[in-house]
Length: 409
Image 1 (tube, rainbow, N blue to C red):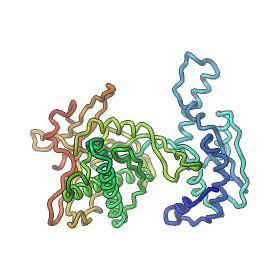
Image 2 (cartoon, rainbow, N blue to C red; image 1 turned 135 degrees about the horizontal axis):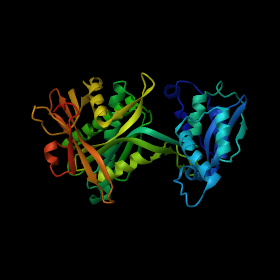
Image 3 (cartoon, rainbow, N blue to C red; image 1 turned 180 degrees about the vertical axis):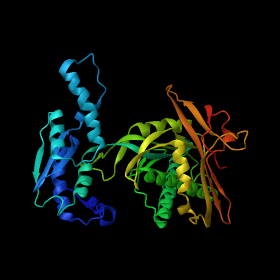
Image 4 (cartoon, rainbow, N blue to C red; image 1 turned 180 degrees about the horizontal axis):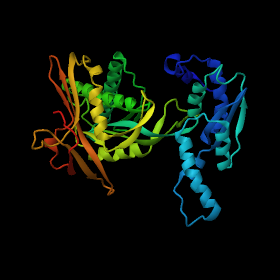
């Protein structure tokens, strides 16, 4: 017998519409059967009068459809068909789960699949909101996200600690995450964050997408680091971890692994952004904050338009959204000012440039990164300085200097 306690997450507060528990359970039973213990995924769906049409395919078909094609193995009509399928499937996976009937049928034709129809005892969109149905279908599907910010917290020297010390440090980091989240909630800044344990720390991302969601994650990241700094100032021995941190924006696939005989209630991510973060963290130094070199279109929630954003522009935008974080209590003292910036050398005119570092990993791959700092001044207590100053990075990678604006130090 399955348990459906996860359906409590479909709350009116989160999704804006009340739903009936029995309708969710009924639909989930149908989707669960189609999922077949993870053998298949539900790629897209469309509502009908008294039911749903769904495109259900074996999970490996996605990999086959978007894998790099080797022209030495196929030719002619089959090769041309595959060239058409790959970009279309990537577009489908990156798009909404609910599509028009024509789009569902066209996708089914390309994949040589037959749509499935399930009858429901209620009308989709009335008894159960379409948005809620899509969120439910997503648990049995796979999604491509191309503009997601992700932070990686890594505990320095984690493998050298005893198991009990490792547990203590992970608990301390988790507490810093929860405390930072609670304080943002108090300021009416809601981060729908998710996290995955890496063994030595966490990947953390915002379930919401767009410029503002990514900016909120960056502020969430430095509040976590600030809470960790306060914990370290009060800690004895190895109870609070020393961290190194990386932040990047990029693409990834999002999916729900099986847990027992059911898909988990929380998602996992894997793709370019997590791969880049894992390679960046190998070069990060203790206490350092590294930011990836990105230039990605992000949705502006205020205009609903895609806006190209690069790393320097992104960090400049963080400074404009910091006023909402002033007056937060950090430790036992109120925050007076916060400054976020990318470090660089002083120019002859007295201003600062931005240093961009070229790193080469153990596999011979190269990438550009930026060194970031966050300065938090409190009303009465000591200031908190997060990240490493530029002066400590004289032997850190190959550097070029970008004359892209003035950096406040």
